[in-house]
Amino acid sequence: MKARAAALDDADPLAALRDRFALPAGVVYLDGNSLGALPRHVPDRVASAVQTEWGEHLITAWNRDGWVDLPVRTGERIAALIGAAPGTVRVTDSTSVNLFKVLSAALSLKGNRVTVVSDSGNFPTDLYVAHGLERAHPGVTLKVVAPEAVAVAVDEGVDVLMLTEVDYRTGRRHDMAALTARAHERGALVIWDLAHSAGALAVDLEGVRADFAVGCGYKFLNGGPGAPAFYYIAERHQAAVDPLLAGWFGHAAPFAFETAFRPAEGADRLRVGTPPVLSMVALDAALDIFDGLDMGAVQAKGRALTDFFIACVDPFAAELGLELASPRDPAARGSHVSLRHEQAYPVMQALIAAGVIGDMRAPDILRFGFAPLYVGFSDVLSAAGTLETILRQESWDRPEFHARKVVT
Picture (cartoon, rainbow, N blue to C red):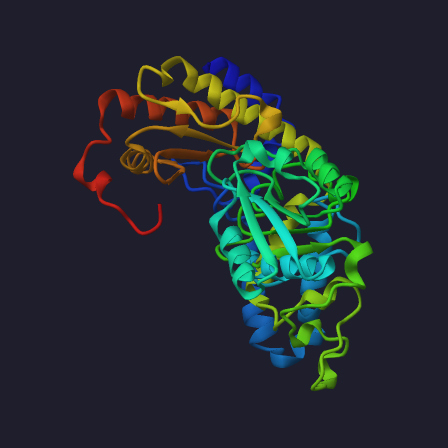
């Protein structure tokens, strides 16, 4: 396996990108699906925004340094990575807030009595948002089905289909094109959460004719902890969207300070408050690494990395109590692999202590993210070897590894 990993690294067309990230020595970082690594050039860009733009230009930086345009400019850059047309993506707020905005917009387009279908593998906050709107609007009904039952559940009674493309726990990937087409055939609108897709997969929102989408900036897009999120509104819906959550930056003339809301043209109408400039500067800078990249090549490497990890783990998995929780078919999963183990929490803590950083999802998931821009095949081999050693030696069974921390 060592020779194979070396050969795969040598043949990797994206290998040089690794040097553009500030990765700690002696660490195999397999949690970029939760928090992307730091691009080396981002600290200087943020420092300039703090010291020069804020420190010297003060409030004039809104115009002088283009702060006011960051949601649009950064949105256009993300649009190029997710197959979205110009003018359809804006960066602002959090994923949860953006989901509230696009879901409420979709509901308003469908009338007074609306059935929303989602699946039990969806990220909990997406379901929380939908349940909140269900409570606020008596005509809204949320129907949650098993992931494998989604296609059957999309029938004539469904008005909105709300799904996350890649399951945050298992990495299972929905067929975006097929499910969007099925929903449209039945008159439903479709919302996609791209939190575990953007920056790792070759998404084509325009090609599949998605209606709405959201996603975050801090996972595979490497925008930093709590980086702003994004939303997408297909051009054909923009003029009809009437924001339920209306704010001054979504107004047609924000600095006219009118007391009545007039929605802006296009996708801007779902903007709400003042953009978080410093975090948006970090995200905008991080996106430099994607300039000129073919997302098909990025996805292909992610598949190769996850395939190789599964191949490295397979020989000892059953013997040491591991079960593959992710689909074995690479076309059916995203860029992370999940393994079940009854002692997942202490095992992951032991891995982190040994320099292999992944994460754990309750109750029994060991989750390993393979960010194609900076993870190599030798990293994969090293991680699998460390996992095997920890399980064989049962070195995970120490009090400090069982002690639960807030963030898992």
